[in-house]
Each structure stands twice: as structure tokens, then as C-alpha cells.
Figure 1 (cartoon, rainbow, N blue to C red):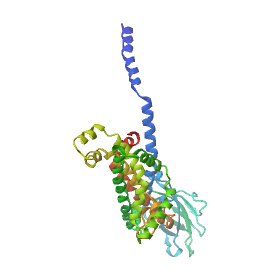
Figure 2 (cartoon, helix red, strand yellow):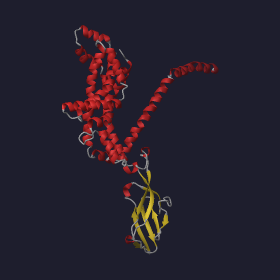
Figure 3 (cartoon, helix red, strand yellow):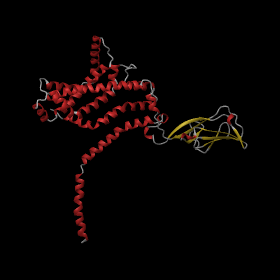
Figure 4 (cartoon, rainbow, N blue to C red):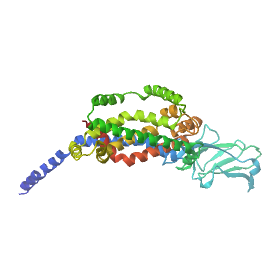
Length: 400
């Protein structure tokens, strides 16, 4: 009876286990795992930049950001007091002091009398001094130099030591960057360039995409092919001809060449091919029945575009807005060519470049400045990210 029951149990449970493992889509799990790995790997540089920008500048120069939560060992040197500060106690002479403030949080790891012998003694141990006597250094940085004879040195000897410094985080790096000369003006200049350079190509491309998707006119297929071909034209190849053309028009009209209007038009021209391509493909995939019903009811193309197509195309518009905003905000080449490097027109990327040239050794300034420059793009991306994938995939796959 017992054997039969066990056999029945195996018969009942074994198929359940098999069906459970059969339902697992190993390919999908592997894809999700690879995607998670790439996301984590991609997040590391940003996390390291943020941690580095908040660290104390002394710690940042000697250790990596991954050690930010543990104590950092750093070699330092302290000069002892002279013989004037010695006191006589019980027939011996003492010079007492501290290498650092008691509340600094540091601890002595080891110390020595030369830079080549930092581990000569541990805290609480003594070392013979060249000027006589022995010195004892405690873990909190206090020392006691004791001698049986009166000390006569006029210059305090140096003691080299290794101190364990606890993690220190501060906002001073950001305060220094924000208070740097011209940063505020450059921040405003970047907004002045980026916002119009994002809105203008979206408006133009939306009208053009609707016309290429839903209006029949001669040469429509040729225009679509031209737009697709312009996607592969390198910006660097068209930059100089476009600049010469713009300067020629400015000279003919008597206007200035280094203006915000010029850079708005330049970014519009460089962004239109991708914008038209994405929006046209997305609009061409909208239900044809809706358009035909609106046409039967007597709606014009403009009315259909403004009341139906634009609201339905918001995911594609948001996707391109993210692309264009990030590109213009992080741009330096186009801004330098069309806007210049004057104090009144220099954008944030240009200001950080100058900061890099003048303070190349100040890593804390560079990390905090770089993170300040990506705060705005991060806000824009996370605000529109729910539309990003949907609009991008639809605009890249669908066609009409």
C-alpha cells in the first residue's frame, strides 16, 4: 500500500514540475538578464560621477569613488614643536601636541621619522628621536616627546604618518562650481539655445511628416528618399558650407553672424531629417479609417492634423524631443561655430571646457560641473521616458 501511494505521488507531481519548467521562457529570461546587466553597466559611470562630485577633494585625489564608504589611508607629515614649548615633569622634559584636531575623525595607522619608513611604529609605540628622547604617538593623533635631558633644538623635526580618514561628503564642490565666474550666464545661454532649437524643428517636421504621410502630390516619394538620404550626411561635412552660406546672407543683409537665430536655424537644419523620418513613419501607421471618416465629414487637412494627428502622435513627438534636447544641450561644436566664445554667448559645455583648461587638476570641480550639466537632460528624459520607447519603435518600424 505504501509503495503504491508513493508511486501515485510521483505520478501526480512529476508532470507538474515538468510543466513548470516547460513554461519558463529561457530565451526571454536570458534577454532580460542581459538587459539588466547593460543597464547596471551603463549606470556605473553616472553613479561614479555623482559620488565623486560629493566627496572631499583630498580623498578624491587619492582613491576611487568605489571606496567612498570606507576609510581612506593617506600619508601626511607633521612638524613638531621646538624646544621652547617643552615642559619639565618629574625630572624629564616633554613636548606634547597633536597632529590634527581631536574631532577630525582621523586615526593614526602607523608613523615614522622618514617618508621611506612610514610603518616604523604603530600607535602607542615609541621611536627614538635624533635630537634626543623618544616620541610616542597615539591613535587619535596626540604625541608625547619625552627626553631625560633638556631639548635644545630650534626647528621642530618632522614626523611622517599614515592616517585613516573616514568618508567625507560635502556640497562645497557644487557651491564652488555654481559660484564660478560665468557659470550662471552659461546655464541661461544653454537654455536659450536648447529650448527654441528643440521646438522649431518639431513644429516644422510635424507639418512635413503629415504631408508626406497623408497628402498626395507629385514627387512625394522622392522627398521621402531625400529625407532618408540626409540622415547619413555627417554634420561635420555640412557644417562649414552651411556656415559660409549663413555668413554670406548675414553680410548681404548687414546683420550679425554670431546670433542665437543662426544657431537655432543650424540645429533645426541638422535635426529635421531625423524628425521628419520618425514622425512621418509614425503618422503613416495611424488608422486610415479615422482619416477617411474625417474627410467624409468635410474636415480639412489642417483640421485633421491639429485635432487628430498631433494628439495621437505625442509619443513620437516626445521621442524626438528627447533626442533633440539631449543633442543640443550637450553640443559644443555647433555652438562654438555659430555662437562664438564670448562671455555673453558661451554655453555651459563651453564654460566647462574652459574650467577644464584652468583647473585640470581639480577633479572635484570637474566632476561636480559635469554632473550639473547632465541634471537638466536627466530631468527631461525621466519626464518623457514613458513615451520614448513606444514612440521610437513605432516611428522606426511602421511605414506607409
